[in-house]
Image (cartoon, rainbow, N blue to C red):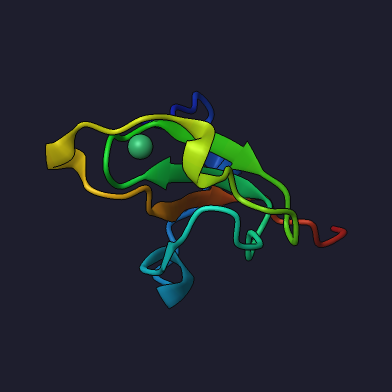
Length: 79
Ligand SMILES: [Zn+2]
C-alpha cells in the first residue's frame, strides 16, 4: 500500500482515471504509483512510458493476470 506522511501534499480525487485497469506494457496515463490488482505490488511509472511488462513478475494461479491501476499521480502543474 502506498504510504505518505504529510497529508497536506495529497488530496482525494474521484476521477474515473483511478478506476481504469491497464494491461502490462501499455502507456501510463499519468506519472505516479500503480498497483497490480493481482498481487498488490506497486511500481512508479512516468506518463507516456510503458507500464511494466507481463514478465515483470510472476503470479500464482489465483492471482490472475497483471492489471495495473493508478493509485496516486503527480500534479505537474506549476503553482
Ligand atoms: Zn502482480
